Length: 342
Image (tube, rainbow, N blue to C red):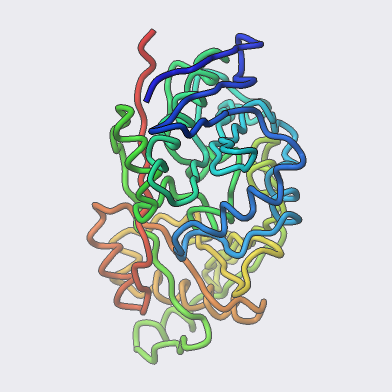
């Protein structure tokens, strides 16, 4: 591969870069245009199937869930074009500030990288990634992260990584391999578990019966987002909280969990359990299994067909618990990062 031309019209983004690939093929990398939308949806739908990737993508869904974000910048959405045909794209963005009121440019995120299958797909992926990185660094990034994750997902919540962003899917070989070749290191791994809602039946165990007699479940629906950043990440998702309360003291919750339901996306509606920190006491005394059962029943009442959880790969206790209650591992999410070398 040799560089043919490189034209930078701004210090902050790629306007148009032209490269020569193997043989006579020439690829241009430029900023997103509105007339790219149909091709972007086609590229998305041509990616290998994964339970963590929303498909089929449509122009309407992509426009509503991605392009409508208040901080969407077309110059950070780069499109690879060969013979006037888009063949791949990379999308970069920035993380939110700790106060939730704005973005912070110090942390740049490679949110998506997709290329049509072909003999040059690895080269194209590498070029897209490099251009996106240079744009983030020019914008002030001192750390680069590969993949969106919960609380650090400017885009693609509910579209990639399952209901809640879980990083780069391990099954997404092109994305993972491109990051690793560029020096990214895996910092964390999440296991994505799912189970069918319709086949769930509450266990008739003595411990669970005792929990039911002694407690009640309070449901708080459509919880407001606590910050601008959280609202942007949620998009059209609805969040519900379940609180397990002692019948004798109904103001003191002994366990809580939240349900995250992307709205109007999946063909088979899926709800994710988030913000639930299981501990050994809750698991051993039946509280965790009881509250989980109530969550599954609630999801069924709301029309969901699948419920999902994400668990740290090193947490053997939680893995054993969710597998015992019928969850199956469907994918793994990797969080990768690297420092910027100036």
